[in-house]
Image (cartoon, rainbow, N blue to C red; front, top):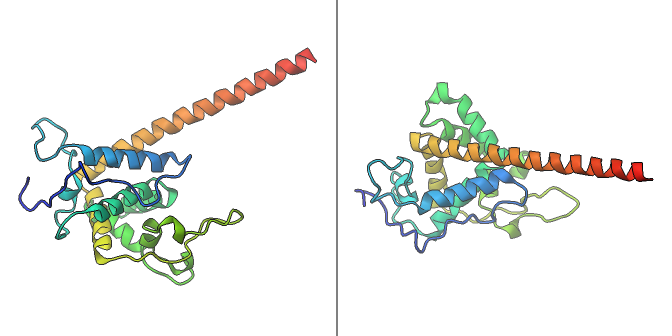
Length: 216
């Protein structure tokens, strides 16, 4: 274990988001899967020639000065990863890329998050972005005739904020960038496969419909 690294045992800690990826949302599914895969890799005893981004949550959060890493921290981190795969999370990443020249590569995503996470009256009903990210399912409206919306803020602690902020910082490192690129590459692959499957289904339906018309 590296000096200053917090204890983390992947055998008993689960890296699962609070609500999980939504059906049909490829981005959320990919980011969740890739995050779990990242956390399950061995870092302390890796070979010299093993990819540098094979690190665990303990190393990612080593500057947060947390007393320990437990299930809550893993859940918060996994929820953050899932958030990256939604349209709003993607917009924060895009904003971070645009801020690179101003604040530097390392802090660009944290700066974007600070802007996005600011509480503002009349925006998202006054809720902060982190409250959406870490809200349990029973805090969200399930009205079938309206968009899902946050009904009440979850009870968050300072550690939740620390974890999220240091994850955004990590995303600006070479290791974080490599992981982000890997996720986006897999999203593109799956989206292309889904489009091809849909296209083939439509073509088959057209051919079938045309054949029926000819027979009639």
